[in-house]
Length: 400
Image 1 (cartoon, rainbow, N blue to C red):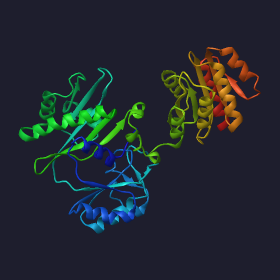
Image 2 (cartoon, helix red, strand yellow):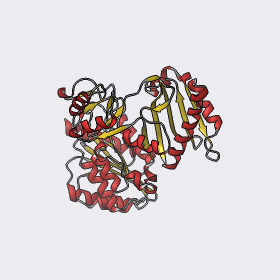
Image 3 (cartoon, one colour):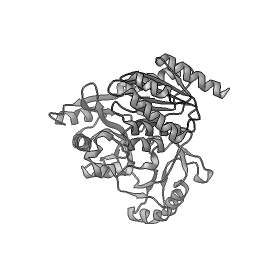
Image 4 (cartoon, rainbow, N blue to C red):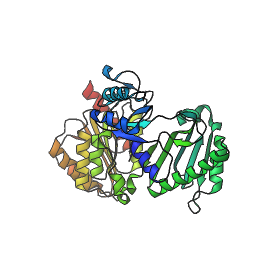
């Protein structure tokens, strides 16, 4: 689960992280009061969307101007102008894709006098099962570009969960960033704060880009991106309330209600599979035979008829879907349950595109019999390779 920058900063501030004063702005008429509350003389107006590259982004609408999604205002009137231009308009960045995202929230923040910019993030290192720090002197840049062009400028280390952050971790960060004296002490304190916040709230990723040194020699969190482990949100109802559904795909929201692992993609073939590994293999083989998947959808090993029906409805709700591939290997999941779920969904929403079904495993013969005797125009498949070739051929035939 992602949250906005202003929410992330409010959370980090509770743990003692140094952040600038700021006020969220949700309506144009709130801009003047927010600007007066901060006092100026310099304000930063920041678009709040779940995507990076906001500063370099461009708005689709001409009336939004051409100054990007992060703007520096030098007067209250300029704040009001920027807020009215940005709110409600669509920002396109390198991460949103050409469709962009509508800006429904802004964050008005005190301007900072920047001396230097750094990068620091925390994430779970799956290889060690520890929380890892990633630190670089190249703040303000995409870390992927830094890793590609200047890998020597990235320092990574893990923290043993038994001991937590120790003094030497802070010294590693200070050395990596070239900090000495009081700034080195600040880096050590910041390491403790970030690690504690990360572990306490079950974060999956915490990125500060940039972390800055101000002209008066203070470290400050200038931007913050936080992602939580969705599987842990039952422990944090107060954090779950921060979720902004307008930033998420409607189909993904619907899938989450049924505990389905669903991710919308931009292809033409809808997929319903059980097991993440099999789902990935299904996506790959569709691509191999010349088409693109419209989604990743894992119904899981213990899905019931209701869950399967919901999954099928979500797939068919996507107007880009020109064909559907159901690929089930029944271990815990039973093929007859899948078959009944597919039939129930088809009866509920209809079937207007080709459907290929590949079943194998527990109760497979019963599942095949249910589909065979249903009277539906379903294309059976013997294995994954056969299924992929048949659905791709059917979609291309329909398009011809």
